[in-house]
Image 1: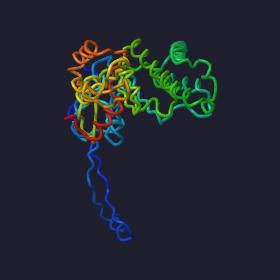
Image 2: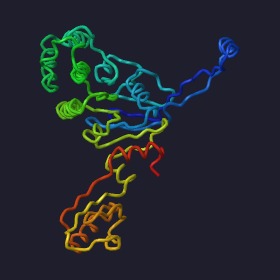
Image 3: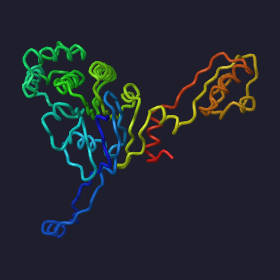
Image 4: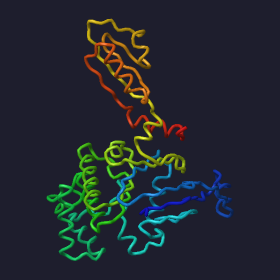
Length: 329
């Protein structure tokens, strides 16, 4: 049974229209007119327990609005949502114990106090005993490699250390479902890698379900087999990340270095693919995925090859094309 089930979810915001100038201000004060903005349009998907799913889309696509509806922060205009068997907007106590929302640009730790003090407050909010709080803080701090920083004031922590502490605070009550909105935003490469490694370990250890938004494609490729792609409020793809690559980028780049004793020219390489470059004994061309194995076999059998590499198109390029067209057709 899905732990997250969304059917025909929609959110419409009424936005006031105001003409410029004094007359427009007076008219706006006494008689306001509105237009409706559809932030999310009839979105449907289901996520099974223990899945880590990437939620992708350009700025303004509706990702954060969807997450806020899934966590009960805003009420949907249409459709139904069930998370861990609860309707989010009712904000039942048990529902709040089962979820967490981490937003990379927001903080919950008290700036001038040691992170450990804020964690003790969180433990009290969730009715954890002192022994249980110590055990969980110790376990998560070890997983995050942040034991020594918890006694320092939050304002003295680096951005990466602060993000780790925020993550610890958000997971102290051991939620079943994690909603992560840009959890590595602004972090350096080492901190990003540490957060990804932690999330993977946490998922494997506790079987937590994760819905992750990120503009860092390395987060998605490292953690998610499945992705949801939203564009202008509509869900345009729900499936495997590899399936998205195969569907939107059906070519692979083949780079070959030939032995120097043979003559290589464009005519020689024409049967093997779409030639992109040829410099001396090195050539690069595009080959359709379905013909890749056969093409490589022919190259090795018919020509003297010293080195051969096959590369997939960068995931950033593929996702960028999807965002630009708003379609997978």
